[in-house]
Image (cartoon, rainbow, N blue to C red):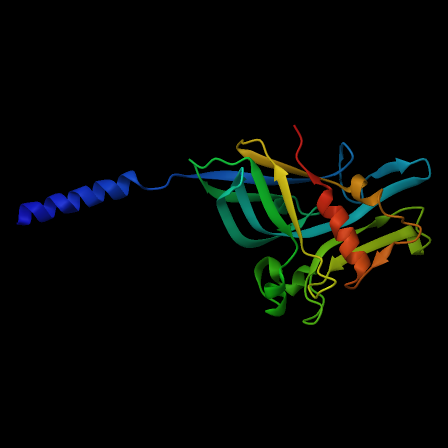
Length: 230
């Protein structure tokens, strides 16, 4: 009897060892850009057209609920919140522990903070209000901050400020981004701010500081500015 028990134990142990998932560390990289040029905040100006020269001084946004997909099948997911700050290089790289044997050809994530997290009040970590991305318990988190200067803006210092957020219908600014990817050690995503800003009439729209229809519209433009490149 003891011999049978030992054999069963040995078989189970070998099965557990053989079934242990091998994890691989993948890096998700974010590269803010203006067209083909990488963005260096408050350091360079970028020519949009003959009458406009853009300077980006602040760009921050939340990424949450990262998923990897193979065709129509979800193969991996992470429920977490990451604050990406173009002024802080270390935040532009997220390390993901992914099973080494999964297959994926798309990445999907949320741009912003979901309504359940918003109604839970201020939190810690990247959701700490000290990070400067929280309004009040009533308005919740700011999903995206984009600030800079343009001669088209008839404001003080020609500044534009887009603080985009809101989780109440009809001003829910949370967006889903889905992109094809090339499997590699690093997954590189670019955010083309030229594409987003050139679709905004900065003469008329240059400041958004509360949830609104305009905040929803511009959130959609920024979500569409994410892309992968060969």
